[in-house]
Length: 273
Ligand code: KIV
Image 1 (cartoon, protein in one colour):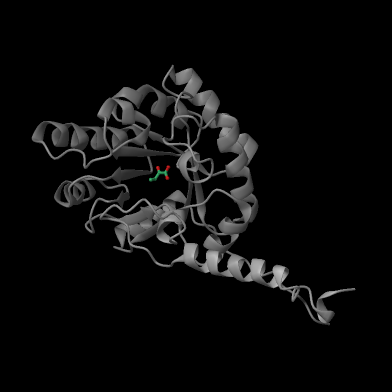
Image 2 (image 1 turned 120 degrees about the horizontal axis):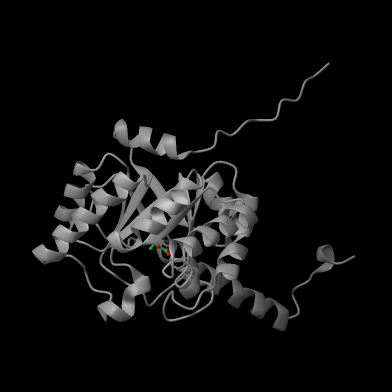
């Protein structure tokens, strides 16, 4: 008798991320917003999948992250969770669904966790969101912080340039990072800040610090999938390394398809019933 044992995939947990930091293993995080891509990303060995509100830009074509709704984030997150066997899935709470009150933040987090099956939420800000972070954590929902360039505040900043170059902003960022750790966040994203500051934060915090445009001295890196795969073309910040030219590959494939259809060479004898 042959016994077919289902191969067990060990899920990444927030505790494992902490252990990775403790032993000096870097954490690889990437965004995903749909089932098909999340399946590839997960199988390829990513540790954390972020269902980022960057979906507003790369999936919906909005100029900023502000328009995306909680329902839309839950739709993306649900699709991703269905595909994922190993990675920890973190979902952004979108703009306008946690700033009003800690009760609203809790309700938004509960909807994300209950309806999508995700494993954690992420929110932007420091001391301003302290009460919301504490309230969400008190319900047993893991929270990841996000400091530095926080795109939901783009109209306050006015530009997507590097943040915290000046001492005052750098000091506030370090203070906020410590506060988020004290509150109980399991991790922190630092976006587009000087590498030396990001390194200092990662050193002073016990929890994992994941950078995007924050240099190498942090505990892990995160990129937007469409950017690193070369699907998006116009976005070219210094920190972005392109690992593929999928725009070129996809365009080539579609050009060939159009050519074959026009030339009546698709479908051929073997491709028909
Ligand atoms: O929404 C997002 O993709 C993010 C990353 C840039 C960290 O927050």
